Image (cartoon, one colour):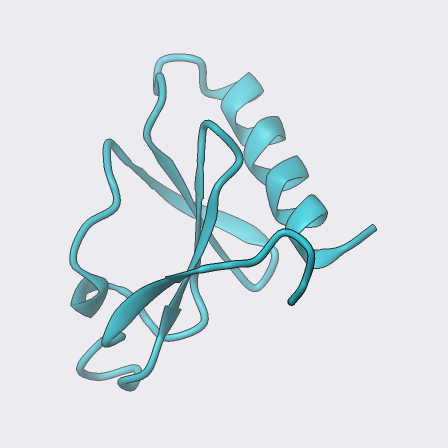
Length: 82
């Protein structure tokens, strides 16, 4: 299973157990869900390396910056690993 497939599976499992959170973005860090947001927001609120998984299966990664100041940007993760 690829990393993106694992992230999608983690998010799908969390959504099944938390059906009161419709749509939105499931936040994953180190293989565990740590939060949910109704939409992808400023990357400065997240640590670099965090993933955001949308309902449609799109995956974004917080990049740049540092743990204290937060990430600099969200970058789409290529589903083919390219």
